[in-house]
Length: 343
Image (cartoon, rainbow, N blue to C red):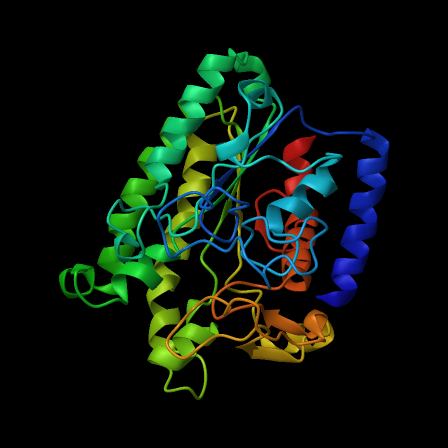
């Protein structure tokens, strides 16, 4: 993958150079904590990270990003040619609906109930409602919206903070792995249709990663000795169905240009090693027993570029960069690279 990445990235750079400048008029981000850049800061929730050591490698320090530095949308925005950060919804002006807004919220899921034990969060449905209100108030022309880039990362919490959680959640007892995936995808289909009606045409849909290999799930479901196979097996049908859903949209809507970003298949020891990641099962920051997020103002690893995980669930800036670049050039996407979405 490493050689392919270099070749594909060089090709993408040349293509981007040919286009020059900002390649889309606006960029909208929806999803969960992987994409959140500060929308949870003022919510009454355990899922917020506007404190040190989060942001230790970010120019403005702790902003609400669930990482030590930039997240995946930050890198994608750079690749697409934006010279500024896409603002979080909570501090975005109406005028910024013309250039892009990040609606993502830590704890968000496809199901309204997901992550309720953490407190407030902006569900995927509510994010779409916020987007609708912003673009209507700002009177963003439909033809402009069709040229914008959209990236979505949602679904992980429906497993981490629902299916594999005890009471008050009951989905584990009510659904098999396949049944739950089908249930989630039915909701996802409805939400994507809503976005399509609102003008979304160039959409990168991120699948769920190997959640069983996060430090949190290794500890709780893997016996502390390795990836939790049961958890990884559970998310496989979701990814399979989500990829099929992307192709369904492209097939049914002639002007749709949706692509699936495969985070699951790209996670393997050989590729991690080639890319310089030597610690793949532990958090870089200090996480107290039974917790998921970094302990405030506690020590962090000095070699952050060698760690995949920043805390017990979320990736380091180094890992985020690899994912963003691979998605941009098309190494982990199907049928389009993010670059091709922008052309």
